[in-house]
Each structure stands twice: as C-alpha cells, then as structure tokens.
Image (cartoon, rainbow, N blue to C red):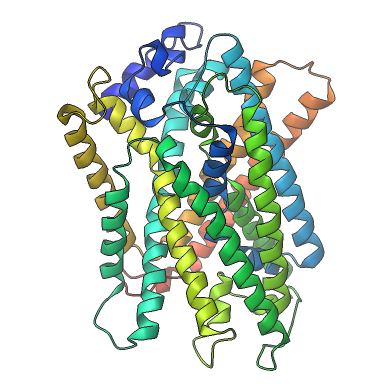
Length: 467
C-alpha cells in the first residue's frame, strides 16, 4: 500500500516536471492525504520546530567528536568543526527559504521528496530522495535502538557483571518501549518529548565534559599525545574519516518534514528554530570536542564515554556521574528513534489510513498499530543481528546525509530563486555543492575502508557493540 501511495504521489508530477497544486498543497485544509493530516499535521510553533530539529541533530553522536578531532589535530579539527557548523546553518536556511518561496506561490511542501521533484523538475529525483531519506532514517532508527540497548547493557553489567542477559535482550526491551511510544500519532505530538531531549543533550554533555576535565587532571589519566599518524596516507584517511563523521553529526535529512509541523504561514519561523537549535549545537559540540580531546588526545576512543570507562583499571570519573550520563543518553536515544521514524510512519499512513475517518477510529488505529510495530520489529532485528552497525551507519551517513543536507539545498536554491549566475550567492552555492559532493565520495571511501579493516570483529548476534 505504501508503494502504491508513493507511485500516486510521484504521478502527481506534471509534464514540465513540477508538482501540481493539488499534490503540492497537502495541508489538512486542502483535502489532505492521511500522511499529511495525521503524521505531519501543521500545528506547531517555531520553538516546537526548534525542539524537533535539535533532537534530530544534537544526539549522543556529539560524544564521537573528540575522536573526529583525533584524526585532524587541534587547529584543523576546530577549524573544520566551525566551518561545518556555518555551512550547515547556511544550507538549512537556504532550504527553508526554498520552502517559503514555494509556499508564497501556493505550493506548500511538507515532504522532502515532493519539494525536490517540484523544484528540480524530475520524476527520478522524487524516487532518489525518498530512497536515500528512508534508508538514512531507518539506519538512524536501527542505530538508536542498538546504542540504547548498549547503554542498558553497560548499566546492567555494572550491577550484575556475570548476569545472564545478553545484548539482544536489551534490544528487545528498547524496541518494546519504542513500539509503545510510536503510537503517538503525529510529529507534532513529540514536541514535549523533544523538549526533554534538548535538556538531556545539555545534561549529558555537561556531565561528560566535567568527567573529561576531571580525568585530564587526574594522576591516572593517560599521557596526553596530540600527534597524528606518522604515515601520510593514514593521516589522509583519518582526516577524511573525521570529515565524514562531522557531516553525519551535523546531518538530519528531514528539515522539510520538521518545517511541515509549523502552523501556516511558516515563512520566517524556521530561521528562529534554526537559531535555537544552533545555540545548543555550538555549546554541546565544542564543549564535548575540546574537553574530550584535551583529556585523552590521540588515545581517545570512538565514544569518549568508553575512554572514561576503560576495560582495564578504574573508571576515570565517579560512577554516579557516568551512570547519570549513560541514563541521559539512553533516554535521548528513544526520542531520536521516534523522530527519525516519522518519515516511515508518514509513508505508511499515507498508504494505509483513511483521512476521512477519525485519527483514532478503528479503521485507522489498527493499521497504525500493526505497521509501526512491524517497522520497529524489523529495526530491532537488524540491531540485534548487526551489532557492528555503527560502521555501516558511517557509510550511510556519508552517502545519505551529504546529498540531502549539503548538495540538494544549494542546488534547489539556485534553481528555485534563480540568483544571477555570476552573483556571489550562485557561485558560493555551486562551490559548496562541488566541494561536499567530493567530500561525500571520499568520506564514503574512508568509511568503507574502516568497515573492511574492522571485518574480523564482525559477528552476527554478537553480545558486544563494535566501536
């Protein structure tokens, strides 16, 4: 049913490649389909959108940023972190302006795939975006379940070192909780959860930063070594892997769907949401990066929490502090899993629900319960079967987030608002598109190389998450 709905949606593209007004105005007031009316209902304020966007970007991946600096060193690492923050803010603001531009002309888009097909005038672009977006979002959902289960396992083994429970037991527990929470019918209904998520991200960032400072000043701290690899080729691969990590950390791929939650007219509101989100980003990203890399240098692990809890020797921070930080990470991962499932839920709802019936009518409630539960069961199965999924997500991030968040926004801006070809804006946008297309290709190669190097650690249904 979902596939048929996508075909019908793509079929709304007219002969010139644009989307017809009937298809491009899917708000509830325009005879909306069920995906628009139930999942992407437009009732939110700019701060609600800010909460959604912050949850989509600011997650436990901030704890990988010291590892990203390890591959580049202080100067280049902090410079590229700043550049990436500025570029992504610029990219997201351009995409928001394109959405506002279309809305002002009577074509309000609430789906990334519709926006791309309308602006770029290509039927295949619709399928490219929906394929990449759903792949990335499903990958993030699987990764969220896996990492949340890993957090539970960390807490469990600290209390019962020889207990019988395995990683897959915790995967099932997380999936059950998410299956319950997934019955919240719309993206907008997550606004309170995502506000708590924002507070949690601030909380564990401060806790981990404090733990890193304490560890760095401790007599048990490892010797600080900030040198890069002696091999030039290794330095290059490490740098591109780090850039790929940064691209994945700043990516989200669902900004049009987040802007869709704003009550119309949405013009200008998303910029306020971006300012709120990036205020949190600047604080959390730089604090985590600087304190983690300062404390552990080139010895920092892919997740700085692992460096604070070494396999041998005592923990480098108080147990209660690490426990609270892990709990905060666990709770936020549930919110992230919910946010990145919304595109899949919207596609399911569009194909299975009847917008003319009530949202909680039996006709719509039963398919929602079954389809969302089955989707999460699939994600849980993948998480339990592939505990080395982090390496796979690195490849998905390089291949998926780069086109969605770094290439398409500037391309759509140049096409929709049509600045003069010799204007600084057009040239800058073209330069950003070319540079990040290259970065994405090289980053994908670097992450695939890491996947190959880690292959001997991979085991289906392993009891350990591969870093």
